[in-house]
Length: 436
Ligand code: GLU
Image (cartoon, rainbow, N blue to C red; front, side, top):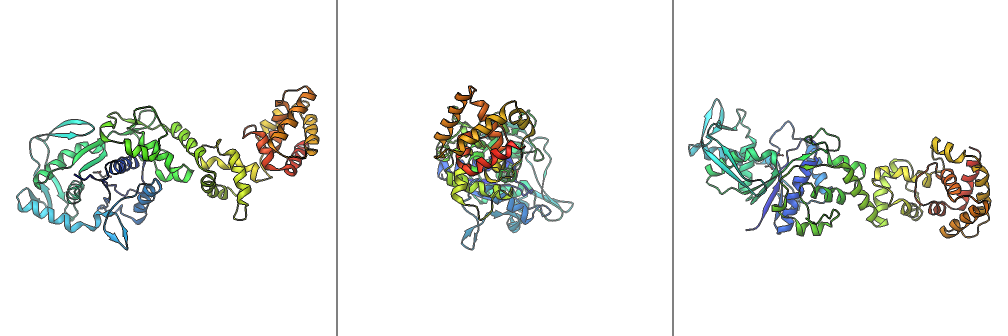
């Protein structure tokens, strides 16, 4: 049996973390089994069904690298399925149920006769879950205004699209008893179900769409590396069982399977995601890193189209391993790319204004002015030699020099900074620091 799974979001105006994780588990399962990943937009609620709300979903999925495999042909492209374009189909199923006597008209609406019995949902993740349907009221499937209800359209499409595995959030587990009743009434074999546990905030509360950090678009805007977020989402409720955290996507596809999905709720740990993003940033090729960096540096007004790419690459190379988020990058590059960088007043007071610092910096400036080779090695040996002559620790030169040329106490290796800044700039900055 060829696996067919689907991601079936309702357009709400955002793709949230939980939805993206559901999409990812479906996508991974399809890729793992060589099956098909269907995207079906559940947009029968006309009020919410806007072009923007749909676009947010497509953008989020594409950004995370989860392409869908089929849908109605549109100009050579496979568009996703839209339920809003399938209303006649749902109507025909309502008629089918009416003609079999399994549904009936009620005050202008149509209700499905729920079987009054007990049923068991055999879930691939949650195990057997029993439901008592003896008191379950009949189910409205077509509203008075003629619009079909979620339960009906969801089941009709899973049937029509020959979905083999329904992988979705645990919040839908209690709906599944209704869906099973509809499948039985339509004389069809239901798909297998796999309900994935919820995602909680780190404090154990339920993650809601309103929580900060719940929207995929925000991660995009802040400069997360999509592969890092995708890797992190994989580990929300699933793991490769050997404590590894950074795992290449091809290997994730190979390892992913439904029985290993955790039955416990997963906790969303922002600090861990941040760490993981830093790991992915550090591993990017300099060309990729630069490509990602450019829009953030442009937005911060630190570069423009005339900026020399090679020089930019040299500057980025020295901060690449330090930054954990592209949004933070301008803080690391401002003094590399701009001469009018701000000075941290506390750093100035503690290092530049420290007793004797001005005299030591003046000596360092003299030595650096006389330096013929402006290289990391020479910059380092010259500074160390001067420290030895002055009988001070190297820190007594390194710290004030760093604050003078960058305005900050933290940053990449001082000698690398000095090298990429270039001799003239460094000497000018040391002069300026002397008059601060
Ligand atoms: N449109 C439903 C939702 O977004 C889909 C549920 C399902 O996957 O079956 O929650």
